[in-house]
Image 1 (cartoon, rainbow, N blue to C red):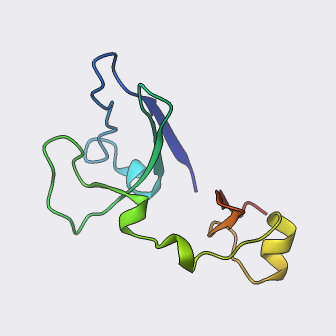
Image 2: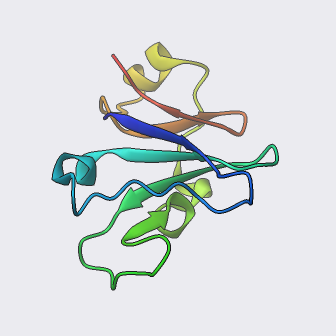
Length: 100
């Protein structure tokens, strides 16, 4: 899974990638770095009504409940536990995506 990374504008507004204009972004994850120290992750949801600011990007927390993700030490341990490549897991609270 590819990731789009953007930094918020100096006034705090998000720089929102427009997946309607660049359709390949619909399969990407968007990492939004806020003007503070927060990082938010989003997925595109074609079935959602468009929002004036975020278009059809939905915070990942709206899709996935953290307690449903397996806790694995690393990619190898996640693989052994059956986590598919591209799927998410965590290591003691740090969200990860299995890469290999």
